[in-house]
Length: 318
Image 1: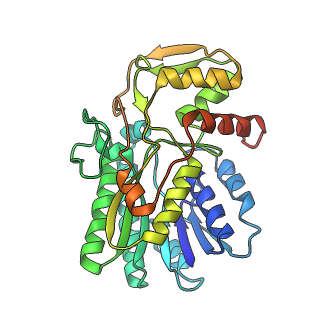
Image 2: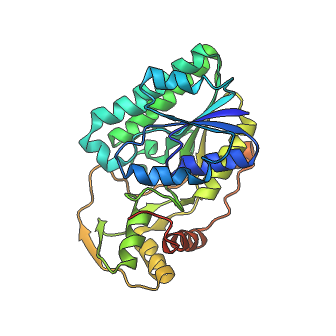
Image 3: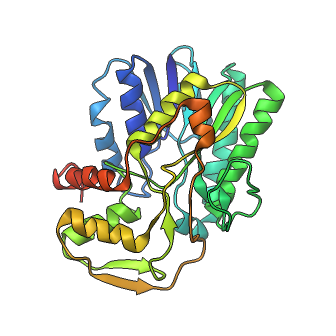
């Protein structure tokens, strides 16, 4: 297949494209290399795929019609993996208009471009943040998600609704994949695991917001890639699917695991819990197992070992 991957130079996107190319697909990537974090990191993420003859890169914004049009100029596009987004809960509180514009209007422009080019298959990267502050654990796809607690979460839910609209009106086949706290090599430097591990290894203090009892369902990148590739094979109709590890880990426990892996003691500085954060995320993955044959294989202990080994290898930029 010839697949278009938006946001392909990012953490998840670069891993997705490596797998697609290894599986014999051709890939067109669009990425604007914005300055949310160092563009040079994103360019390095592409080092494994750029020599591949089946790879094409479009440097541009998904909100730009000319850039999107170019993505469809390399031949028939068989499907789209839509990962491009302005990411992060806390930054979205400071720039809500930007998050809406990129995540909602960008998605709408992409769906319209697909319609005009008669491309009707998409995987949409959603987020566990759409569940908001819930007391019922684990989170299931049938849960009410009408109470997001950050602009980022609201923008991702809006993207899901747009996807459903295009399925209803134009019979698009779309799966909205709700990712749960993805980590691993190339993780964004603003994410907790990356920040904490780097600072612990440098004997620098880390900042914990709240008392450290908040819990997350941490999902290793290889399990997410498994879910994405299996979704490509099963893509029919409209579905919302959780992709997680289905086990929660407290922030305090995560820090303890990092101390064990790095062999260093963390210096912890506490600050009040921040607006937009939630106490817990936990995926019910029964639907992913039944529909996709998804089976996470990376418990947090193994994933952290792999991630810290990547950091120590020097394959990241400071």
